[in-house]
Length: 306
Image (tube, rainbow, N blue to C red; front, side, top):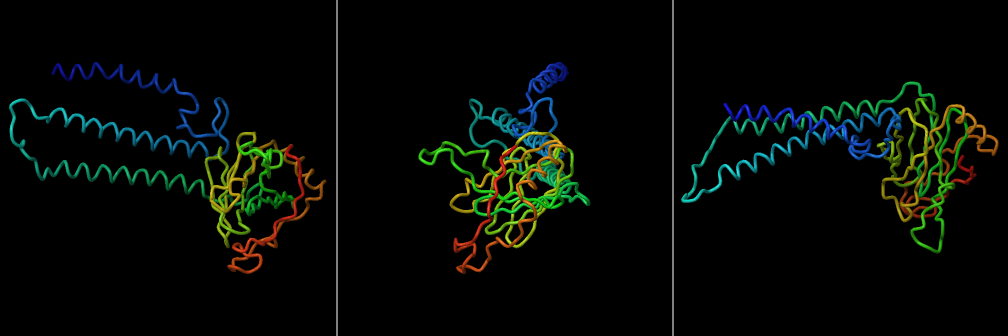
């Protein structure tokens, strides 16, 4: 009876300690050290909070399972240790049906639960928008990116990242010359992802999302940018010698700034769409194939990043 009372007395201090520990966490810790979150500001897209919740929730469940498991291991090691004067083997317990059912059913429930939440969020994130406000065709190619603004009939042809100093290693790249994808704040966006040669992967780090570009098919990404700013992107699929230079940036601006940017593209002559004419074929060894190294790339018209 006294033991139970002591346990009950310990509950309020432990609960208060847990609440204080959680309230003391900064924005990075509350989101499981994921990038893209800033205190007092909205997430980068309408999907990032959902991804963060799934990540943090999964870790909380796994931590609880770990604490219980470690606790049982420590308890068993102490409670059933060999005591002074004991000899031989202790009583062996076999075929404890309730215990066997417990450690079979509980892990199954945990796995099915994590699968269900993951499938639910994945279906929501992967759902396509019926009528997006902005549609952009994204071409990945060794080792750069092209962007077609489909509704506005303008384009940006990119080049691979240029080092700040050719003579010195690890000096970084000239960010102003990276291909830049400009998106309007609060508008639904659909990206149509294609590759001109080998497989690539479109990854915007702060968006907590990436999607592969597979040869011969089109993949889609639908989302709504919810915070202005410039975000780093890169290819996340090893795609050849200069894979590390296949960088780009995403700039989220106000709708008025987006309209002005489209007008600038028209003013410098980037009118029309970059189609599939620059693609390399898939016939191994033939001129222009993805294996021959002789394929053409898009003619580049540079627009200084705004």
